[in-house]
Picture (cartoon, rainbow over the protein chains, first blue to last red):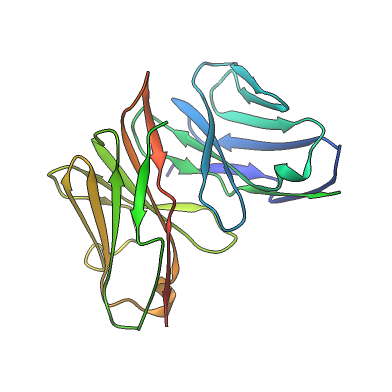
Length: 111
Length: 117
């Protein structure tokens, strides 16, 4: 079945360092979404990427969707302690269909 | 953005009892609702997809007789964990899909933490 692989599983960085998490789908996606989950909380929607090669930015966060619509990345510039949490990508094969989540990348930031 | 609520936010029950979890879309009509389960330090695993007025579609490995889903209206879906056991302890999260704003989007509820003693 459809799988979404996400790496790395854990990332420990010093505050101010950059962070990147990568997702790769076994099949072409309609869109990919990114979520952030704080410890003890629920996933919070960050962004959706739909177009091939799309790049979107939210302040220090940069999201990319690959040309083949099978991979995606989230890059955080100059991490802050508020960035701590687990970042999940989730892919859809068709709009409105089920979301297949990656395994998540847990980010810890040392002040 | 659209709001999805879940009730209760947490529940502790004895083994063998049944627990009902509600998922409501508060300001939009949800054509489809999804139920996920998340174990500690793991990702969200889709359990089932429910459409209003029809039977839920369960993912492989999810027992439909144990996890009863009812989607009675466009704003309410319920998940009942029947004869709960300690291994059912988990974080259950619903999401609602519908036109809310400029494009279709899934909105997640805050989750229900179930502990079975």
